[in-house]
Structures are given as C-alpha cells and as structure tokens.
Image (cartoon, rainbow, N blue to C red):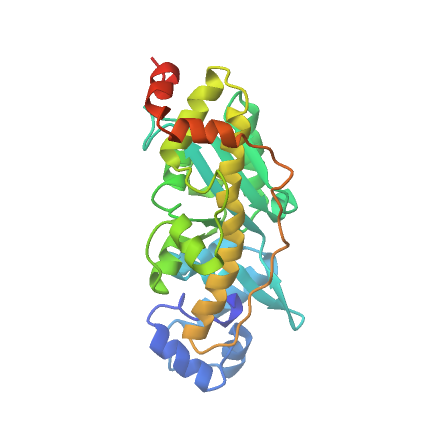
Length: 295
C-alpha cells in the first residue's frame, strides 16, 4: 500500500524497508510517531508525505518514488478499508511508431474518470484532445502496458504536452510483470494468466489496426467499430492485470496486501466485423491492402 512504502526516502531500499516493517514501523504514521532520527531524511520525507496525503497532492510522492514502484500506489488504506486512488487504463492505436510522420488514431480508456465504462476517443476533429485532457486530469494513476516507452511519449510529442498533463503515478504493467517473471507482449501474458483472447479479434495486432484505420478513412463499413473494439479489448485487460500484479508483487515482499477489485467491464455491446478481420488477415489480405493503403 502507498502509505506503507518507504522507498521514496533517500537511502532506503527494499532490505531496509523490510527491516522497518519487522520493527513494527508499518506506515508513514508509525514512522512519524517513532521519531527514528538514526535514519537520515526519514522524518523530513515522511512529514512531507503525510502533508501531501492530507492534501491529495500525489505529485510530491510520485516524483520521489521510483517509477518501477508506482504499483504500490494502486491502493491505500482509508479508515481501515482498502481504497484505490483514481485509476485510468489507457492504450493508443497509431499509424506507426513515431510522430510527426505518424499520428494517433484511437485512444482507449477505462477507469474512475469514465465510471468504468470503456471509452474510445477517435482522433478526428479537435474535441478528442479536450476530452482526453479532462479524463487524465481526473485520474491519479495511469495504467498502461509499455506506455512509458510508447503511449505516453507518443501522445506527449503529438500533442505538445509535458508530464503535468498526465496523472502523477504511472503503473506500466510491462515492467511490473517482467519483474514478476512474465515475459512477452500483452496478449501473451493475458493468455498465460487469464486464459482469454478468443474469436476474430484474438490475432489482431498493431499492423492490422493500421489497416483498419485506413479502411475507415476510405469509407469501409465496420472498420472503425472493429478498431475501437480491438483497442478497448487491450484497455479492459489492463485493469485485471493491474489487480493481479499488485497482489503478486505484494506476496513477493511478504506482505498480505490485497488489491481493490475494479468493477467488471463488458465489451459485448460494442460491435465489430469479424468477416472484415478475416478478409484483411486472410490469403487476400495483401491485395486488399494494396487497394486501401494510403497513397
């Protein structure tokens, strides 16, 4: 839990943190009451942390805590109950790997700011940027998979934003699950841990998503719906993997922390065109792409 970590204090690593826990110093409040003057910076940093906690100023803690440890901020204790900070899972689809030659096509989101309704912002017209800015501002924790290397830098470069536009904490599940011994991309990890990815969208990848976007721009019916559904499939699973990753990481630390369980999210109401996917990825896919690719 966030208020039980001391890794944001200079000079304290996992070993020393465990020593504090074993001595009964389990929370920031315990540390403040114990007045452990033998540990440099502890009193000062914990005092700042408690002040930030009271004000809801998560930037103070997030900037001091190493990004790989941001998973600890997914939950905190409030009145003896486990409560989450405000989560926002995010995944983007693009026309390629880097702006300005490539651009965002769809931003998929789900979390407290969307009331856990899967939400897709299609990058057509100016209003999607304002909506994205508002949803990010209403969130404390961004949850992505490889978002530190791709999604956030891509959005920041494309939109001319700095880090203040994004939530203070960023839980990149690629690094969390790598630390837990799980290698590979999001789909492979999802299959191993959750046993899902069925139907026509199971094998859709980023390249197919690019084709779907250009098909949409050329007026192919069902292409945009299919792209949106594919994007949101990835977004929704981030919530489940964040919860599971938190529990497993806590277990490795010898703590019995249990993550808050996010609401179940269904995508069944969102349409997609399975025939279109099979056509793009089937034997005639190359000829199809030659017809619809951008000139």
